Amino acid sequence: MASDNIVSTNVELATFYVGEALCGIDILNIQEINKQIEVTVVPQSSDFVTGVLNLRGRIVTVVDLGKKLGLSSIEMSKDNRNIIVDSKDEQIGLLVDRISDVLIAKSSQIEPAPANIGNIQGKFFKGVYKTDNSLIGILNIDEVLND
Image (cartoon, rainbow, N blue to C red; front, side, top):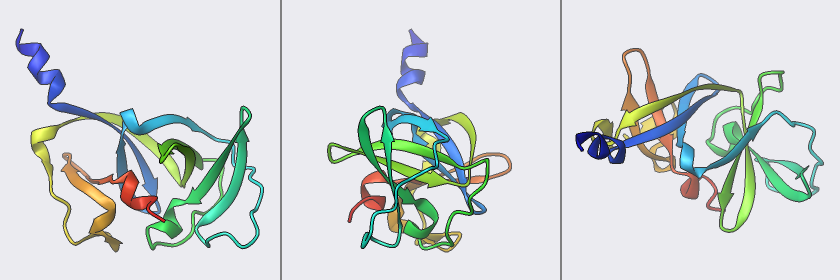
């Protein structure tokens, strides 16, 4: 069937905002999205580490994605969310300003990332996807959490 080919060439992206930058992550890389923002501060941790939280008995390190990407810190509000991803056998929470939509992107329409996107270094992105009214930077989770 032709529809089988279509499925294999699409990527589902969970999109979210870090400041004004619209970013996306392949939904297969996400464990869950939650709004638990009460974290325990970890002394002497990297400046982009907000702290840790207890997620059903597992300790999750929470990273301020704004700081990690070289932007300003995430401003705390009721819209903040933690996007929980697996990285090197550990769960990491990416603190973002707010969640947007899940969209289906055709792999063939994902373009290579430019040197920078909205003042964010291109190394943090796998590529970009253009919609009718926005440009979505697709995060390279391994590169973002490489530290």
